[in-house]
Length: 148
Image (cartoon, rainbow, N blue to C red):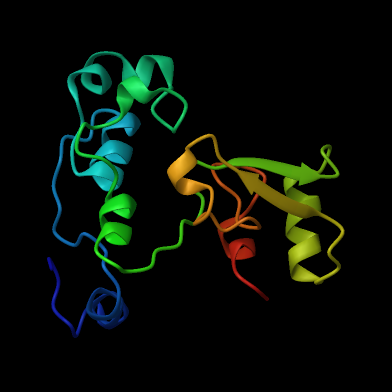
């Protein structure tokens, strides 16, 4: 890690308890590349050339998939469990007209007035996707992604 335990004790604790791909470097010129490196540890030629421009790397185009498969597939193939929180997820909110403020207040006041339902087009993710965790959805504040 870049900083010592005395500077980043929480990061050290997380890195020791969970896999964070700590100290993992890749070219950061496209969001698509980052997703592919984190999901598959590989970004193929298609993603390098077309992925970000078409924004079809997020589970919607098999051309963007690495031939080696996804990390979660390897985890399950080795008899371990995995849970997906938001990656490759399409988010549906009810009511659909909910604003950022509506979502935040629903979370903050625990009213349940806004509900989140996630789904995916990637077959290998369907049974490991957390169904109430929002994917890339700008109306959902980071603090509302956890229980109050």
